Image (cartoon, rainbow, N blue to C red; front, side, top):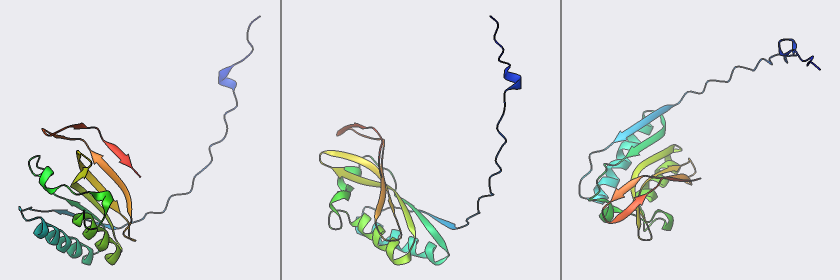
Length: 151
């Protein structure tokens, strides 16, 4: 028995027109800093650059520190432990709250147990850590760490 189905005659549902999404505009500030061996000075320098960009209207700040395998063990911070163990993220979260901006802070050396990560943190306007991404990082002192995302 032959099939009577004819795909070319199949009913096609009508397309539903979608509303045009609203366009949201905001300024993004990108801070690429020259880092020194003085960690406290680097944190102050980053804060100054973020405040300056926010004063110019930036609502989203992206901050990156230089990447150096040799520096990671010495500069690594325990981000999960908070303020005293992570002065970089303490400053970033406070600036995010004070200036009511979102900060995407990349390339923060993170120590978690005996492992090191090249971590990017996202702080919202209420200073909360909204997301953390551990980027791939290799150091002779630790095994290769595969990226993970922690919302």
